[in-house]
Amino acid sequence: MLLLRNCQGLARLSLLRTQRSQLLQGTGSAIPWAGSQCVPCASTNAGQSGGQCHTHASAWRHMLAGLFLGAGAMLSYGLYHRQQAKQAATTVQPVREVPTFPVYSQEEVAKHRTLADGVWVTYKGGVYDITDFVAVHPGGDKILLAAGGALEPFWALYAVHNQEHVLEILSEYKVGELSPEDSVQQEASSTDPYSSDPPRHPALRVNSQKPFNAEPPSEILSDNYITPNAFFFKRNHLPVPKVDPDTYRLEIQGLPKGPMSLSLAELKSKFPKHTVTATLQCAGNRRSEMTQVKPVKGLNWGIAAISNATWAGARLRDVLIHAGYEPGVKGKHVQFEGLDRDITGTTYGASIPVGKAVSEEGDVLLAYEMNGEELPADHGFPVRVVVPGTVGARNVKWLGKIVLSQEESSSHWQQNDYKGFSPGTDWDTVDFKSAPAIQELPVQSAITQPAEGSVVERGQEEVTVKGYAWSGGGREVVRVDVSLDGGRTWHVAQLRSSEKGQEAAASPPPGRAWAWKLWEVTAPLPPAAQELEIVCKAVDSSYNVQPDTVAPIWNLRGVLSNAWHRVRVKVSED
Image 1 (cartoon, rainbow, N blue to C red):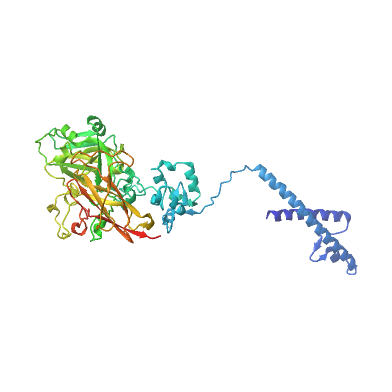
Image 2 (image 1 turned 135 degrees about the vertical axis):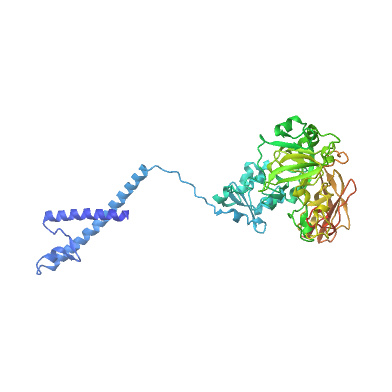
């Protein structure tokens, strides 16, 4: 359009100049042409010569051709200089780099979680297809734990990734950008009672979101003797409360000195700090195996609703004595009440026998540290009870009140849950008052590696099996037997009670073996076997041993599941 506007202006200017020249010379009209005929011919006598008209038409054609050729040159020259002037007068803006990668949503990324579908991960807004890298990853297939999600939570645990060459390797696998909407975490609705729940590690295998319950991947469970806080199984019954440590008070009732309360600072300053390494296990650990026999009610836990940590805090015994407890004081139970509550205001509660609470060898803690750090929110910040050797349900988190009483806690979770029943008892006939609340747990073991359905190569000639073992009540695990053929032949595993490479820990005093044992055995592959049925069973210091099958111990709540653990593995000839 700019070109046309300039053409019209130049044409008008040229015509005016031509008309003026003709008038001065007396050779033409003010209008140079009309239709196809020369104007002078149209206005003269009919008898005027036609050759003169032809001569005039030819002259006009040559004049017009020259006019337009000149106008084009003038126009090009003018436009060029006009554009140069505009560029010089305009401030140059920095050019924003246009992304060269496609944009993907988190939903699209999450579809790539397996080698068959491709393994995609995200990192700082980028999307990476690392399928080809999995086989050469120095950490093995643990990188698959991040498949379909973010790398950052995993790299935060392993500082080796914070190196330039690692980022260079990753950059070679970039295939896209994560959408801006998914790059920014959406804020939870303020009306959601779970909106203040803390963030969790994405590797956890979630059994329920609200309340949050999750276990670590079984293949990494036995990598560490002390379970990292992020991977310690999460068992919440209600929303995680937000507790201000500066205003926190622990109420104590039912003791001779009358009601009293302690601040967090007083709990730390008035009582000696004790440290205990203890394993906690959910009553429903391995419930998924019971559901294979017959459906049960409860979260579908795998084998990893169990973890081990080093806890630190004041001994419950010391605090009770400070409040006036002494032998002969009436009271059979110590009740605990948490600060977590439902929408009706009902709090979580549990109780333990007073003998366990006040025993010097009971090692019950009012813990405010976990693995050398303040308690994480999911694990009871600022104070929780740790009752070594006892079912996880009695280890009350976000502790708000302690009561010495003649009665057990009246809490639903003490009276109408976490109890064992006969396989013949169903929901129509169950009487929760007829069974005692679970306290100490039975002997337990499970296989963490290899995983169910995995493949071992015949050429390896042997297979390494790993797992954990633990028993409640402070009974030490003294042996773990492992079979590759479903229990026909057995191998004795090597037990470990410390981190790999560290000096073996001394055996604990009798009755105070609160922590699990990790175990490992390497055994030759059975000749000609195409499939292995790997089985493990543990024996504790009282010679309690796991039952061989699930069916005889099945119960309607799916608790106390401790039969031999079985894993089936294929043997590949290639």
